[in-house]
Amino acid sequence: MAPRAMSGSSDRTASLAGVRPVPYWLDDPGRPRPEPALTGPTNCDLLVVGGGYSGLWTALLAKERDPGRDVVLLEGREVGWAASGRNGGFCAASLTHGLANGLARWPGEIHRLEDLGARNLDAVEDAVARYSLDCGFERTGEIDVATEPYQARELTAWHREIEARGLADGYTHLDADALREQIDSPTFRSGLWDRRGVAMLNPARLAWGLKRACLGLGVRVHEHTPALTLRQHGPGMSVRTPYGGVRARTVALGTNVFPSLVRRVRPYTVPVYDYALMTEPLTGARLASVGWRNRQGIGDSANRFHYFRLSADNRVLWGGFDAVYPYGGRVRAEYDDRPETYARLADHFFTCFPQLEGVRFTHAWGGAIDTCSRFSAFFGTAHRGRVAYAAGYTGLGVGATRFGAEVMLDLLAGERTERTELEMVRSKPLPFPPEPFAWAGIALTQWSLARADTHDGHRNLWLRTMDRLGLGFDS
Image 1 (cartoon, rainbow, N blue to C red):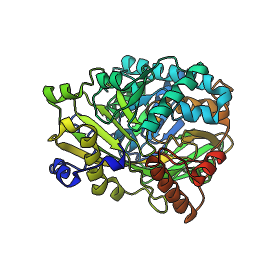
Image 2 (tube, helix red, strand yellow):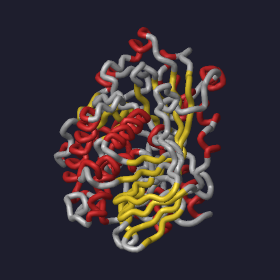
Image 3 (tube, rainbow, N blue to C red):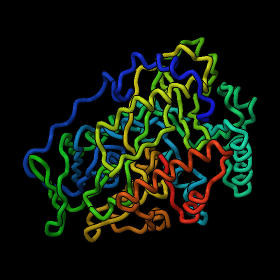
Image 4 (tube, rainbow, N blue to C red):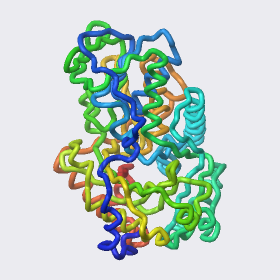
């Protein structure tokens, strides 16, 4: 919601009195025990580094492609503990961080990208059923809502544009009354419902389910085993770990926000910290006051946006708005907790849903997103094709990481496929500059985006220049 709509924040912080500063999804009594750390040396055909979605999908798909392939997966802490267990659980078909970003960057192949994304989401849903992944998968769609008059005008114009380009199949424009029949807030002016392109799920349980599926196919998973160094060793690669090491024919890197073992990849991403709250379960009367019978994911149209959804037990996850870049681009546990952002989010929540005054928040948490300057993933190889990487998902990796896993496996196999022929796959974003220039540029961009939100969306000279250069900053 717009910052100027805030009021009563001192009273509303009472809703945070009993909050626990831990991710709701990871605070689960069904959380699986970690697999033992790697001790001693071992060999394999494919080594996957990273136990989030990117690594898990890569290991799973590698075994599906070739059941006889010996696959080892290393995770520095526990599977799903980072971004994969902290996100909002929006599993989108888009591979390009939304249709608008994809159309702006790859207009010549946008129809193919949309088709590949739709097929990828179908494949995620198929895997959920085939491996009995208990992750609460609900293909509800997502509504992009306008909360200001200029946003409503832009949303209408955008719907007309995608209709003219033949890209609006599955989209429904909702006026204020139709939108409030779906979900009721006095701040909503209109919406655009993507009915088929987004599913809601429990993100941590998806990661844990993928781990179980990998183990069932024979993947050797080692947790609490960080990969420390990556070196060429004869015809393959060698990775050192604290208590051992792995020699592998090929390596797939799914480390995303964490510093890549391929040093030249590091300038392409920066960590951006995102924060979320989770309410207590809504009573039947409170849920009825909001509506939300179709349980869609929701996101507002501001630059500093909010995203929100219902959990399986009818809690409301409410996140977004602040996107915090730490000077130097360091990933540290101390950044996962930010009380001033929690207070701001709580105030915005009750501005959006005044009928829920009195609801308490039970969990509050943050986590780092791997942001790149084009907002969507990039790919590549190193060490003469023995190593592949994918990174830069910028907050929309729940579904897109499966596609990225397919790309990495294609690249390692040296295959020309419909994926590897994409300009999106063959090109790279512009890297971020070194400090202090990165911090100064990001700070100026954030200030400009916030200013645009309070000036009818008007983009100043800095933002217009960034647009022309194809640069951006998002979470």
